[in-house]
Length: 234
View 1 (cartoon, helix red, strand yellow):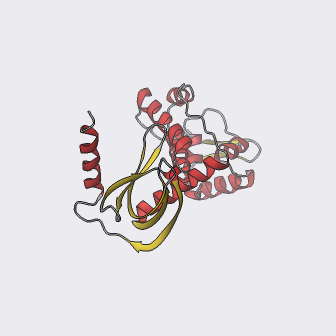
View 2 (cartoon, rainbow, N blue to C red; view 1 turned 120 degrees about the vertical axis):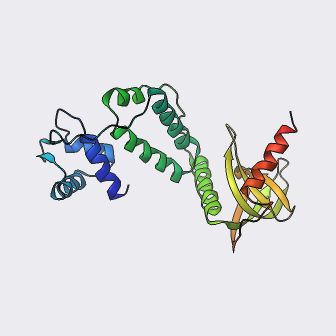
View 3 (cartoon, one colour; view 1 turned 60 degrees about the horizontal axis):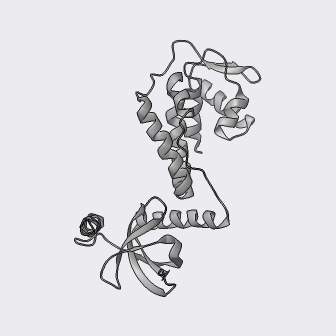
Protein backbone atom coordinates (compact mmCIF):
# COMPACT_ATOMS: atom_id res chain seq x y z
CA UNK A 1 0.00 0.00 0.00
CA UNK A 2 1.30 3.46 -0.88
CA UNK A 3 2.23 5.74 1.99
CA UNK A 4 -0.26 8.38 0.81
CA UNK A 5 -3.03 5.78 0.99
CA UNK A 6 -1.98 4.81 4.52
CA UNK A 7 -2.09 8.43 5.68
CA UNK A 8 -5.54 8.86 4.14
CA UNK A 9 -6.83 5.75 5.89
CA UNK A 10 -5.37 6.76 9.25
CA UNK A 11 -7.12 10.13 9.16
CA UNK A 12 -10.42 8.63 8.15
CA UNK A 13 -10.21 5.75 10.62
CA UNK A 14 -10.07 8.39 13.35
CA UNK A 15 -12.97 10.41 11.95
CA UNK A 16 -15.91 10.83 14.29
CA UNK A 17 -14.57 8.53 17.02
CA UNK A 18 -15.39 9.32 20.65
CA UNK A 19 -12.72 6.98 22.01
CA UNK A 20 -9.08 6.65 21.12
CA UNK A 21 -8.05 4.19 18.42
CA UNK A 22 -5.03 2.16 19.43
CA UNK A 23 -1.99 1.96 17.18
CA UNK A 24 -2.26 -1.84 17.24
CA UNK A 25 -5.71 -1.63 15.66
CA UNK A 26 -4.43 0.73 12.98
CA UNK A 27 -1.51 -1.59 12.27
CA UNK A 28 -3.86 -4.56 11.83
CA UNK A 29 -6.19 -2.60 9.55
CA UNK A 30 -3.34 -1.35 7.34
CA UNK A 31 -1.26 -4.53 7.43
CA UNK A 32 1.87 -2.72 8.63
CA UNK A 33 4.05 -2.70 11.74
CA UNK A 34 3.43 -0.63 14.87
CA UNK A 35 6.60 1.26 14.10
CA UNK A 36 5.17 2.33 10.72
CA UNK A 37 1.95 3.53 12.38
CA UNK A 38 3.87 5.57 14.95
CA UNK A 39 5.97 7.17 12.22
CA UNK A 40 2.96 7.94 10.00
CA UNK A 41 0.95 9.48 12.85
CA UNK A 42 3.93 11.60 13.88
CA UNK A 43 4.33 12.83 10.29
CA UNK A 44 0.62 13.71 10.12
CA UNK A 45 0.87 15.64 13.39
CA UNK A 46 3.91 17.56 12.14
CA UNK A 47 2.06 18.45 8.94
CA UNK A 48 -0.77 20.03 10.93
CA UNK A 49 -3.38 17.25 11.09
CA UNK A 50 -5.06 17.69 14.54
CA UNK A 51 -4.43 14.18 15.88
CA UNK A 52 -4.24 13.93 19.66
CA UNK A 53 -2.85 11.05 21.69
CA UNK A 54 0.35 9.07 21.90
CA UNK A 55 1.84 5.59 21.49
CA UNK A 56 0.44 3.13 24.00
CA UNK A 57 -2.68 5.22 24.66
CA UNK A 58 -4.31 5.70 21.27
CA UNK A 59 -5.25 8.48 18.89
CA UNK A 60 -8.26 10.69 18.19
CA UNK A 61 -8.96 13.62 15.90
CA UNK A 62 -9.39 16.88 17.78
CA UNK A 63 -13.05 17.85 18.22
CA UNK A 64 -14.33 20.03 15.40
CA UNK A 65 -12.01 18.53 12.78
CA UNK A 66 -14.44 15.92 11.48
CA UNK A 67 -14.67 15.06 7.78
CA UNK A 68 -18.05 14.98 6.01
CA UNK A 69 -19.10 11.40 5.19
CA UNK A 70 -19.56 10.12 1.66
CA UNK A 71 -23.21 10.08 0.66
CA UNK A 72 -23.95 6.42 -0.11
CA UNK A 73 -27.27 4.70 0.33
CA UNK A 74 -27.27 1.27 1.98
CA UNK A 75 -27.99 -0.36 -1.39
CA UNK A 76 -25.14 1.50 -3.10
CA UNK A 77 -22.73 0.47 -0.39
CA UNK A 78 -23.83 -3.16 -0.56
CA UNK A 79 -23.25 -3.12 -4.33
CA UNK A 80 -19.71 -1.86 -3.78
CA UNK A 81 -18.96 -4.50 -1.15
CA UNK A 82 -20.34 -7.34 -3.28
CA UNK A 83 -18.52 -6.08 -6.37
CA UNK A 84 -15.26 -5.94 -4.45
CA UNK A 85 -15.74 -9.51 -3.23
CA UNK A 86 -16.26 -10.77 -6.77
CA UNK A 87 -13.21 -8.91 -8.07
CA UNK A 88 -11.09 -10.34 -5.25
CA UNK A 89 -12.34 -13.86 -5.98
CA UNK A 90 -12.20 -13.95 -9.77
CA UNK A 91 -9.95 -11.21 -11.13
CA UNK A 92 -6.19 -10.97 -11.20
CA UNK A 93 -4.17 -10.15 -8.10
CA UNK A 94 -3.55 -6.54 -9.19
CA UNK A 95 -7.24 -5.72 -9.65
CA UNK A 96 -8.14 -7.61 -6.47
CA UNK A 97 -5.69 -5.55 -4.42
CA UNK A 98 -6.96 -2.34 -6.00
CA UNK A 99 -10.58 -3.23 -5.24
CA UNK A 100 -9.78 -4.01 -1.61
CA UNK A 101 -7.84 -0.77 -1.16
CA UNK A 102 -10.69 1.23 -2.70
CA UNK A 103 -13.24 -0.37 -0.39
CA UNK A 104 -11.08 0.37 2.66
CA UNK A 105 -10.98 4.05 1.66
CA UNK A 106 -14.74 4.16 1.18
CA UNK A 107 -15.53 2.43 4.46
CA UNK A 108 -13.10 4.68 6.31
CA UNK A 109 -15.28 7.76 5.69
CA UNK A 110 -18.70 6.15 6.18
CA UNK A 111 -20.95 7.01 9.11
CA UNK A 112 -21.13 4.18 11.68
CA UNK A 113 -24.54 2.85 10.61
CA UNK A 114 -23.46 2.37 6.98
CA UNK A 115 -20.11 0.92 8.01
CA UNK A 116 -21.96 -1.67 10.08
CA UNK A 117 -24.29 -2.39 7.14
CA UNK A 118 -21.33 -3.17 4.91
CA UNK A 119 -20.11 -5.81 7.38
CA UNK A 120 -23.53 -7.49 7.37
CA UNK A 121 -23.72 -8.09 3.61
CA UNK A 122 -24.66 -11.74 3.07
CA UNK A 123 -23.55 -12.13 -0.56
CA UNK A 124 -20.15 -13.81 -0.78
CA UNK A 125 -17.64 -14.81 -3.40
CA UNK A 126 -15.27 -17.14 -1.51
CA UNK A 127 -11.61 -16.69 -2.39
CA UNK A 128 -10.08 -20.03 -3.29
CA UNK A 129 -6.41 -20.09 -4.24
CA UNK A 130 -4.33 -23.15 -5.03
CA UNK A 131 -1.31 -23.41 -7.31
CA UNK A 132 -3.43 -23.52 -10.47
CA UNK A 133 -5.77 -20.67 -9.52
CA UNK A 134 -2.85 -18.47 -8.45
CA UNK A 135 -1.18 -19.07 -11.81
CA UNK A 136 -4.47 -18.25 -13.54
CA UNK A 137 -4.78 -14.97 -11.61
CA UNK A 138 -1.26 -14.10 -12.77
CA UNK A 139 -2.32 -14.87 -16.35
CA UNK A 140 -5.26 -12.48 -16.03
CA UNK A 141 -2.88 -9.78 -14.77
CA UNK A 142 -0.56 -10.41 -17.72
CA UNK A 143 -3.39 -10.19 -20.24
CA UNK A 144 -4.76 -7.07 -18.58
CA UNK A 145 -1.33 -5.43 -18.81
CA UNK A 146 -1.01 -6.40 -22.47
CA UNK A 147 -4.40 -4.85 -23.23
CA UNK A 148 -3.42 -1.61 -21.50
CA UNK A 149 -0.06 -1.45 -23.29
CA UNK A 150 -1.53 -2.58 -26.66
CA UNK A 151 1.06 -5.34 -26.97
CA UNK A 152 0.68 -7.82 -29.82
CA UNK A 153 0.70 -11.32 -28.30
CA UNK A 154 1.60 -14.69 -29.75
CA UNK A 155 -0.75 -17.28 -28.29
CA UNK A 156 -0.22 -21.03 -28.31
CA UNK A 157 -3.82 -22.04 -27.91
CA UNK A 158 -5.68 -25.32 -27.41
CA UNK A 159 -9.31 -25.57 -28.52
CA UNK A 160 -11.97 -27.67 -26.79
CA UNK A 161 -10.67 -30.78 -28.61
CA UNK A 162 -7.10 -30.17 -27.49
CA UNK A 163 -5.86 -29.07 -30.92
CA UNK A 164 -3.11 -26.48 -30.65
CA UNK A 165 -2.75 -23.48 -32.94
CA UNK A 166 -0.48 -20.44 -32.98
CA UNK A 167 -2.06 -17.00 -33.25
CA UNK A 168 -0.77 -13.44 -33.29
CA UNK A 169 -3.49 -11.31 -31.71
CA UNK A 170 -4.21 -7.74 -30.75
CA UNK A 171 -5.81 -8.03 -27.26
CA UNK A 172 -8.80 -5.71 -26.82
CA UNK A 173 -10.62 -6.68 -23.61
CA UNK A 174 -11.30 -9.30 -20.96
CA UNK A 175 -14.83 -10.48 -20.20
CA UNK A 176 -16.08 -12.62 -17.33
CA UNK A 177 -19.06 -14.85 -18.10
CA UNK A 178 -20.03 -15.98 -14.60
CA UNK A 179 -17.58 -18.85 -14.51
CA UNK A 180 -15.17 -18.38 -17.42
CA UNK A 181 -13.00 -15.56 -18.67
CA UNK A 182 -12.55 -14.78 -22.36
CA UNK A 183 -9.99 -12.61 -24.09
CA UNK A 184 -11.47 -10.54 -26.90
CA UNK A 185 -8.97 -9.97 -29.72
CA UNK A 186 -8.36 -9.09 -33.32
CA UNK A 187 -6.84 -12.28 -34.73
CA UNK A 188 -4.29 -11.60 -37.44
CA UNK A 189 -4.49 -15.14 -38.77
CA UNK A 190 -8.27 -15.08 -39.28
CA UNK A 191 -8.35 -11.33 -39.99
CA UNK A 192 -11.40 -11.09 -37.75
CA UNK A 193 -12.42 -10.83 -34.12
CA UNK A 194 -11.90 -13.95 -32.05
CA UNK A 195 -12.39 -14.89 -28.40
CA UNK A 196 -9.89 -17.04 -26.52
CA UNK A 197 -10.28 -18.60 -23.10
CA UNK A 198 -7.24 -17.80 -20.90
CA UNK A 199 -7.41 -21.28 -19.32
CA UNK A 200 -6.80 -22.78 -22.78
CA UNK A 201 -3.73 -20.67 -23.55
CA UNK A 202 -0.87 -23.14 -23.24
CA UNK A 203 1.67 -20.32 -23.28
CA UNK A 204 2.03 -16.84 -24.69
CA UNK A 205 4.79 -14.50 -25.75
CA UNK A 206 5.14 -10.78 -26.28
CA UNK A 207 6.11 -10.13 -29.90
CA UNK A 208 7.62 -6.75 -29.05
CA UNK A 209 5.16 -5.02 -31.37
CA UNK A 210 2.71 -2.32 -30.27
CA UNK A 211 -0.53 -2.18 -32.24
CA UNK A 212 -2.53 0.95 -32.97
CA UNK A 213 -6.32 1.11 -32.79
CA UNK A 214 -7.76 1.11 -36.28
CA UNK A 215 -11.26 1.49 -37.64
CA UNK A 216 -13.21 -1.79 -37.88
CA UNK A 217 -10.75 -3.65 -35.62
CA UNK A 218 -10.84 -1.65 -32.39
CA UNK A 219 -12.73 -2.27 -29.15
CA UNK A 220 -15.89 -0.45 -30.26
CA UNK A 221 -16.04 -2.58 -33.42
CA UNK A 222 -15.43 -5.75 -31.41
CA UNK A 223 -18.28 -4.96 -29.03
CA UNK A 224 -20.58 -4.21 -31.94
CA UNK A 225 -19.64 -7.51 -33.58
CA UNK A 226 -20.32 -9.42 -30.35
CA UNK A 227 -23.72 -7.76 -29.93
CA UNK A 228 -24.58 -8.80 -33.48
CA UNK A 229 -23.40 -12.35 -32.83
CA UNK A 230 -25.42 -12.84 -29.66
CA UNK A 231 -28.56 -11.19 -31.07
CA UNK A 232 -28.37 -13.69 -33.91
CA UNK A 233 -28.56 -16.55 -31.40
CA UNK A 234 -31.93 -15.43 -30.03
